[in-house]
Amino acid sequence: MISLLQLTNILLTEDKVPKLADFGLAKMLEMEETKVFTDVRGTIGYMDPEYITHSKLTCASDIYSFGVVALQLLSGRKVIELDIVARDSLTKKVKIYDLLYFSDDIYAKHVAMILQLQKHELFFFMFTEQGPVMFIYGIMIPCIISSHFLFILNI
Amino acid sequence: MHYQLTFSIYIKYLTILSFHFFYLKAKDVVSGKKPLEEFIDPRVRDDVVIEDFVLILKIAVLCVASSSVGRPTIKDVFEEMDKALRNTTIKVQILSSTIA
Image (cartoon, rainbow over all chains, first blue to last red; front, side, top):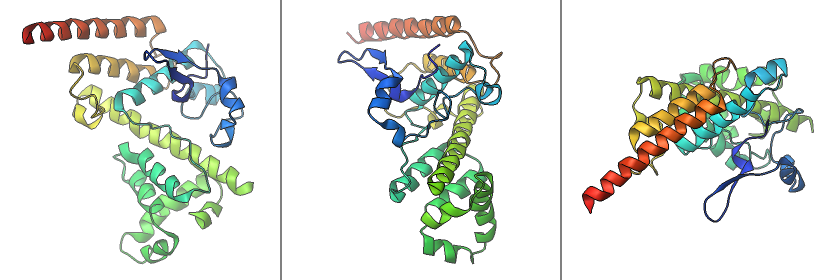
């Protein structure tokens, strides 16, 4: 079992031969500061949902990670993008907007749209017709889920 | 410190959410509800054999099934991808010979 299969762990040689890189290397480069790692092994997004719920790691977990890598390669889009630094608010917004590119769901569009607004724009946005509803779906519910309201202050 | 923790939880939530939509899109493309153009990387659009691309896409969608029972084994994955590769190689050879 590899359990660490992800895009950032796959390196290419000069002849375009893919090689699996070790996780220890990533640690030495202090990548854990910019990545959101879980307390257990593995990165969010590449982790088997069964592993999250039952904490049971099997060979099927590797197949799952492989599927995530393959889907991203086929679409040419980095969906599991965790290089998001809280301080860098501009790139943060752009990247979150990218993350939600594939959604057809109106709720996710609300999240993406509100995250693109500035703080003072958000205030006037509340008085538009769609404003309050979108605010509830786009900000309130994610905040309740992430259990705090604080992050709005830093958008 | 507290703020960063909250933000990371929020990002985890967004990541899982966005991958969910990504997965739904891939599933719709495989089942034919949506056109392939909505999923395929535009940079490789003209260079791939579409049938083989869809074959690999199908395998990838099967791999990310939420239940481990539904996922194929690595042997199945290898066999299917090998089949796709051989198909593509043959088609490219035929194409290049007709041009020549």
